[in-house]
Amino acid sequence: MDTNKPGIYEWRIEGAGSYIGRYTFSDRPFGNYARHVRDQLSGGIYKPSRPDGWRRIHRELYAALLDGREIELIFVENCSVGELNARERVHRKDRGTLNGRRRSLEECRRPKLAQTLATAQADA
Image (cartoon, rainbow, N blue to C red; front, side, top):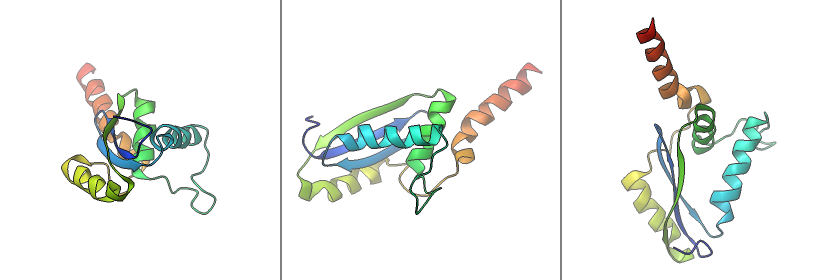
């Protein structure tokens, strides 16, 4: 893998699933997502035109960070710019469980909350 060439990446989030994305420059998966999580941590907004427009992957990364769950970034493959859309669709179909429907932060954190409640009930 050459992260200086266009390609496909995957975010794997423990207890949540995988998100498949494409990049032409490797700062997309590194810089942009880190910035979105930092903005959420500081109470910032997504965009002035969409203050609460965080996409599902942004909410899942944020929730995983708060919950201490494992987050992994994998560079899947390199391909030409002309192939990016088609290759992304193939990988999304196979394992892009976080691509799609928007979820609230509470929905993203439910697996952790359910686990915490189950532990508390077992200890009682």
